[in-house]
Length: 306
Figure 1 (cartoon, rainbow, N blue to C red):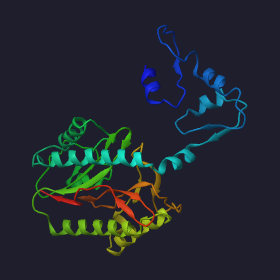
Figure 2: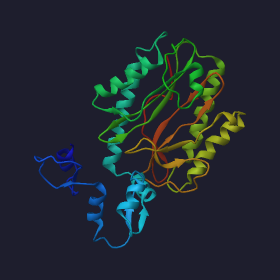
Figure 3: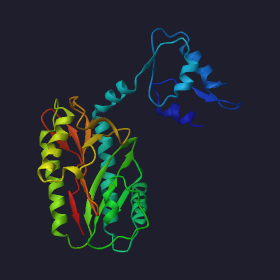
Figure 4: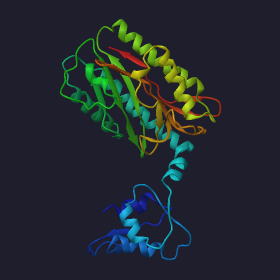
């Protein structure tokens, strides 16, 4: 169905159309039959191991590649993709711009009484209007709902005085963005202001260590120790960040157990958060790892008060 588009977009690849049924008018390299037979045909003369990536069906591979040595290349490919070329960085920047424009536009109309899912749908509309698609379903979580890191927008109405966590990303030319802002509608309470300062402080500590060669776990630790010193360590319940590119979550994971060094050209999020019983706070920005620093790619103010 997408054969012609694939040929046009993948000029350096051989494209094979696979059809399990007869369709006589399709021109080009077409294989009709069972997928396992196509795979057998393509690898029949291959010497050495056959490399597969994670999305490939194991049962299909086992049947189609019987007698062949199989190598899982998922991690190899993920690491290769983690270091971005200049044109890839440019596309990520475009995706960031769209997401930020959508956030700014939606916030101009944010008011008490709107439902969370109404705000989420407006975010999607604004990204679509700018020629992009969402890189994931937006999160809009107000009040108690923000205590869940991956809250699903609900029919809860937004109230003045609540903290609202908005997590949104766009996809442009196949490349993703991922941005989170905590918004205050109405007067900001002192306790909420303190939480925001702690999260921002944790983020700043982590960013100060961001550079080529540092272990991902060390970056995570900078934020985690800062929050623990404030007595809130038990409320920071996820890793500090992740890579972004063709997928919104990809290698590397900025987490306590990842001791692998970051490389120049990686794009990562730094997103500390606190999740209490009646509220949540998260700030997420995207950074390009450089030789001696992390270059911030996102531009929105860390905290937005309305």
